[in-house]
Amino acid sequence: MEITEVKIFLKDSPDKKLKAYATVTFDNAFVVRNIKVIEGANSLFIAMPSRKVKQPCPKCNFKNEVRSKYCNQCAASLPVVSYPAAQDAAAAAQSEHKDIAHPITQSFREYLQKRILDAYEQEKPKGRAGSDHNLE
Image (cartoon, rainbow, N blue to C red):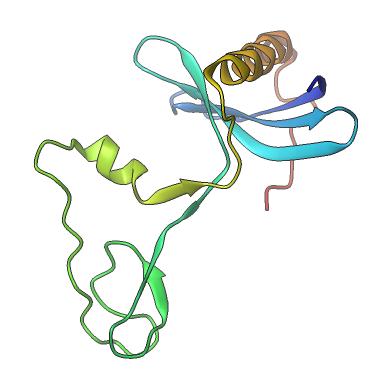
């Protein structure tokens, strides 16, 4: 599988960890939007598009975001979701999201990350030109 196009949409807040969004086209036939370029403690990395995990209300079965205290439908108190003590805050926050799409192999993840970060480095000097990306 070949990456045939990478589009970068820079974010304008220089003090934030989120630096850009990427849209990647594979084999001129399949596109993945909203791959994030994030500044980590040591280097840049990518985060795949994800959605928040939901938990059903035991009373009305409405799906609420994990760690909500009350149901958004019936206002019933929701059970507390606990995380292992060894888990730090970042890991707990990450467990609230589930990837929509992601690479299966480490080698493809490295290939994807390299292509996106290379495109980001080329786009960065251009500034905000063309960054009016409409996120879904």
